[in-house]
Image (tube, rainbow, N blue to C red; front, side, top):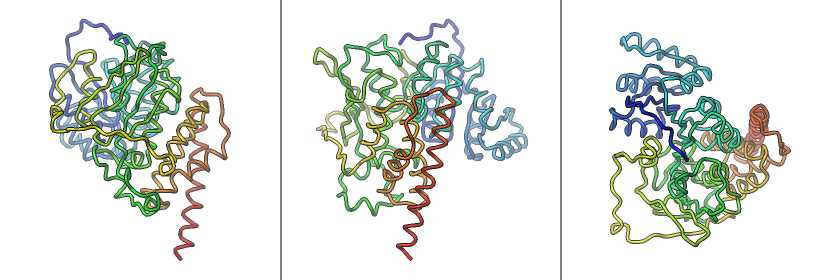
Length: 410
């Protein structure tokens, strides 16, 4: 990938889509270390008024956008009372606006779930450097992002630790979506999540609290559950195929409990390149913000002698069927990944709301997929329609599981 050439020495303007989540707060930590390089132009959130207000106090952005209109009105009132000069926008239109501001060079796309698709795509079409931290937009419509980047000159840089590691191991002139014949395989690593060693029968009793207790990473609740089901790896598989121009058969998922080797790339000459580092999201964030340069991220240095050894395991598809579902969706293509993602979001939220059990998550996904044909029209309108249809079907499946569970309990 070729870096955007510029002689402008002013700090680069940054928009954070999803500034109140874990990726957003880690990004702000890195930005705060480099005020000479970056300035915060816009911050966005969904409903967390208090947290966004605190961020506005500290970073003094020009704009703040909230997807929830009532929350935006509350934020605007609070800012006015504190006499903070921040323009408040709302709704998807507000998110799209701050994603394409002329004063913005870099957009961090960190809105969880399908809600982040449109503003991330808007930033790409506007020719920005787009740091992809949420998997869902590329899972749902990766080809749209690749094509938009080629047309606009945007840079798509992965921030997810595994994909950022792969990117760092790719040829220096690599650009998102390229197919490189010298790349033979990608080893996509994962910690295995909190249930890596649980016997299969025990998974039926797993609680949301246990699923969200990740052994290595501090993450939001949705992505924590995805890690527990290994759907996180499944979505990353689909994203890797889009970003790195490989087939599902060229991606092998490897459980690496130490979470130090973040992924590996095998070349046709037999070389295998790996990226290592302590499990801290500030490393890939700093890499993507400053690429092709390197800047301080605030991350503790890696001590190999402290680690002593690395372990690698193959995931168990019987205990974690979400991996099989993801591979099947990746091979099917078309709208299949969109349906997979939408059904998973509905099922995970239902599990967090205690409407279904942990092992019901893949069941909801598989039943939803079986009811919806795979469409080959992958333009934006068709993608959004498939997403909506899958959510409606998945919600019906959740209602059935919930009703059955209540009947059995009563």
